[in-house]
View (cartoon, one colour):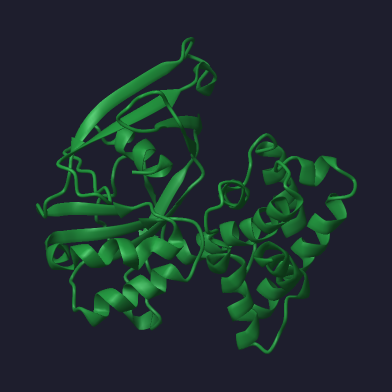
Length: 296
């Protein structure tokens, strides 16, 4: 149960919710800290601690996976025998590529589970705590969480009329891949740059040495999107600068991974775009250089 999983579980406490920790405990303890500044009405910080029973294969309306993109199938494979009792599987993750991998895996095993994909702009991070039962998750900022049925490769197979009720607090959208591509474009600029420069998001705009790099990388990504006929709702450089300013004090997830010596998700962000470029016989030189710098 990472930061996003803990935050979502807190929203669903009025429902029957299970945890799916890696060590197969019988009960899992969650700790969520909400600073006072998160809402205008909230005057004091709030700390919640509660326990969830761990999933033992009971029938589920929803299984929500909030792992890193690269851990998707690794997390699901041990539960293969239980998945026929799962009606809906929601991948609530950064990046793209793992959704189709998961769709192919479900089809390979002839599982009836409906696959959904989602993205969230809510902020949360895990920090060490004195609690002997585990770490504490900090609710860093409210945001929007959206999800939709994952589109199949054959457009004739797409089901855009699915009326399955989503878990509380998640908004249904029709074309989730398009919304994910919008977020992917922003992440493909902010994440590698902040990781290489070791800077907070806002410094990409405030530092006159960094802003031209942001603009050049955004132009490269935007050009690829144009070649792929993936429309963007706004000029990408402007959008990235808005996001960087709105999250000025934040460290990108990639930078957090680098600082913690964890694997990053860039293969499902920049790497995914490189694959798309290669399919058109194109290259992304700025993206490739950043990826090399981060792999050295």
